Length: 80
Image (cartoon, rainbow, N blue to C red):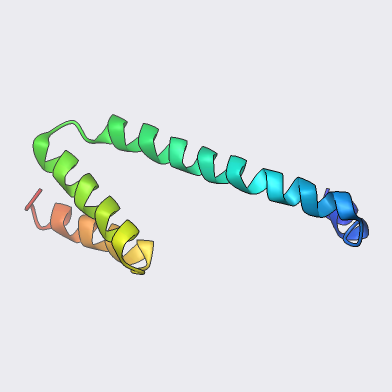
């Protein structure tokens, strides 16, 4: 598929397909995040940590690995 995508890089329909696939991809990523967060946030502390991480990611430009690392560190320290 990559070879065909590269071969048709100058075709006008390719830009239309690419523009149509971007919202679909974003929707699938958000849906997966919602499913994962609802499955893992079983206590109030888990739900609070999930909401705080999501708000931090949406409000700032912090790299997601830093947020995951902070959550892992809090969990390893026994805080959550």
